[in-house]
Length: 396
Image (cartoon, rainbow, N blue to C red):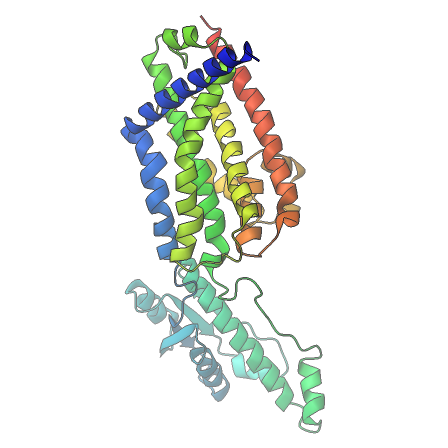
């Protein structure tokens, strides 16, 4: 026991040295401070503020009524009566509708064809065209929901009036044989904030850490003539590279332990986003995700040649990682190679576990497979980071 005490004391001294050195570097590097502090502090607020309304109501629409019949006017009244769409004008020509969009009086126009009433009376299917400015996805969704629901409901009502000899119940069965009702269990607003922000918040944690650690690694190489991550004093201090990796990782975990509480806990509370549970499972998830991200970033930093390369090589990966999570785009329709690649990125199990916790109210049994994946990633990336740093340490 007496022989082990000096060794343990020496190990802790080395870890403390690398932790202090990395914290000092972080606090004195403006670029890294921006990625580690300013971006995680303000990006969640920006995204939450943009999508805070969840859905758009009274989106401005111009209708091109080429038919000008009682049926076409009935369809226009139905669309205007929805909460999603506001019909600001009815014009006879498409050119006038395009002019209204260019002058920002409306954001879409609907074309009712000249044969609208004739086709309906003859029992034929009618096509109406919706042209939308998709510079805002929220407007596009409002137009699609309002126009589609109005057209479907009017079609059912019109078909019901075409069979006057049948009873009201028989006519209703004809137009709607299976009654249905949409109930949003978890995203009751059916909005983008509740759907998208939990995923975005997880990615902000991973991507800012990835860019910041890559920038630090590139900076070390630029300042070292041998293009290594370590100075001669560091190589003499510790006999093993494991202490270097752990010391650096502890510095990143220290910074992001505080930032994660802000990004994943306080911001959703301020903007009233779904947060069905916050328990010991949530705390353990945060720790698991941070550790996996840290060693993932350390491993990627082994391939960053200079300071600017982290931005050039890694900034575009945010959108790729977002789709690979399977939340925005289902993994079942991805190629097997992409599903395999998704499982080696911490944000994939991290986003799924976080959404399950805050949006679905899942317990520890549900997120257990994601936690196992995160700890497997931690083990693999710790080994790879250690091997990568040891390789660079021996390039003398």
